[in-house]
Image: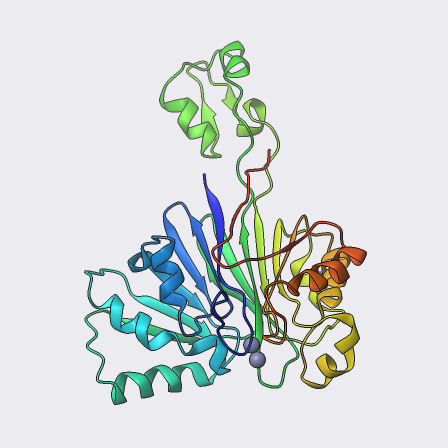
Length: 307
Ligand SMILES: [Zn+2]
Ligand SMILES: [Zn+2]
């Protein structure tokens, strides 16, 4: 079961020749989930050959131009293909107004349903196998971080145990694997726990940008397999980062360490740093959290299954 995260852009404030605006996408079992959509997001999607028509959910952190100006294009393009499912956008209050105004002024022809949901802290989307939570960040505007979390999976099925208990191979095995008990012909009741190992942990991805460092973030992103987090400035610009309500790379690393995440990917870099100078951000972060990666545009992270 694949779970990949594609970094579509890593720049904050403005796009640069080699850095699109901050955006990321999950591809899981053929489903796509987009996080933020600055201008040019489509270009990365195209370069990665990702099928944007499969995007069903878009999560917007906040209503700053560098996170939403790519949306009208995506809405327009989505009507070029046959969709039978609605497109659901999640974000702060003004998102609906923004989407409605764009549709009206640009006369975007839309032949599918668009639903805009105003986010509050808590679970905002729940399906059989996964859920998405939003939590408040501290920025110059209402802003949310997002956590995409798989639910626990059934444990491993042990056919040799099933055989030894005299459970005939066939439909009963399937029922047990789905987590339901079965009754054998001789009246014995077999529970899933008799033939299966412990529940297996799901995978967790967190997306955090733009924000001041606040201690509460760590609890939300705890034990993430991958945390993509704003690391906009180097340590020497700490004061200016605070004023603008942004994080330094070492702030991001601090969250990663406190939350005991597996891997941290930095993004939302200030345009003041050349591509070469981004290494200073990485250096700052690594002092605090060793498993930090300097995300690059169109980088792909794969989150392996846990057993
Ligand atoms: Zn931003
Ligand atoms: Zn912002």
